[in-house]
Structures are given as structure tokens and as C-alpha cells.
Amino acid sequence: MAEGEFTEMKVHRLVLDPNTNSPIVVLQDEDSGVLLPIWIGIFEAHSIAMKLEGVEPSRPMTHDLLRNFFDVTKGMVDRIEVHDLVDNTYFARIHFYLNKQVFAIDSRPSDAIALALRTISPIFVANHVLEKSKIELPAGSEGDGGMGKDEQWDEILKNFNVDVDKSKIN
Image (tube, rainbow, N blue to C red; front, side):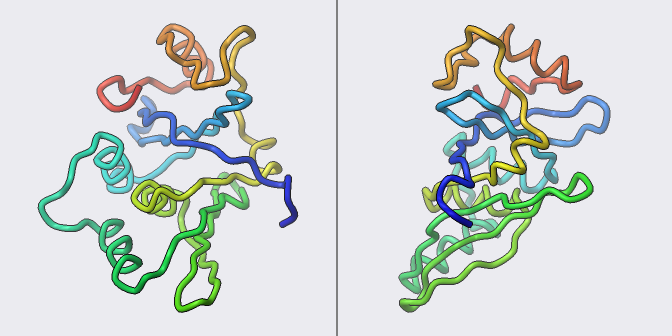
């Protein structure tokens, strides 16, 4: 896609949907403060949480294994893109270099995000995806991760019917 059709985002939080007990990874555009919640599986949430909390597993998990593969082969993850949303399902691609060739492979967003965290690669979301499912910060909030006030964050998620798991990420 052309320049400007994607927005770079960072992992902001992991939360738990109280209705389904499903984990949600929340991405945030640090410039505008726009939030994007993506429901993910428990294993992927665990992998993301471990990396965010700096916990190293005694044996490599799947996402660590893939990072190790890139290290050994001198490959490099360029970026990940959440590029589509169809019937409430997000679609992602992992863009990488290997043997002087450029590749893009399909991925679940949760796996792509877990890999991006391990390879320190940027996460991009297509603007049309953001338009379908973003959450705006309340007026007066800072866009630089301005969810420092738990009350504001809780209020946003209350409206979104999501409960914060404060034991995970701030």
C-alpha cells in the first residue's frame, strides 16, 4: 500500500474481556492516542505479556523460536501490518528480509505482534482498519500514552465493555 495508508502503533495494554474472559491486546497510536483493541488467544496473550514484562522462558516459545531462526539465518523482520478486518477477524502480514530477498507472509495479528516485540520491529495498522474499530481518547488526554490516569482508561473500557487486568501492563 502507498505511504500514508498505515499508522504506526505500539502495544499499550493487555486487558481481559469480562464477558468471554478472552484477552485483548490494545494497540495505541502514540501521536493521536487512538486505541485499537484486538481479541487474541490465551497462549498469544501469555507470550506477549512475558515479553512486555521481561520474562525469559527457560525454553524458547514459538515466537522466540522464530526470532532465533531470523538471528541464525541473518534474516530481519522489517515490520508487521494489520492490513484488514473482515467479519470481526483481523488479518496481518509479517514483512521480512532473508537471503537478500523481501518476503511477506500472512499471520494472525497476535502472532505477528508477539514476533514484532521480540524483534523490535514496528507495528502498522491500515487506516481503513482503524476507521472500522478504533477507540478515541477522551478530550484533554495526552496522546503520548496519556492513559496514565487509570480512571480515564477504565472509563473508556467501561464504554467498550472491557475490564482492565491491572496486573499485566500499564
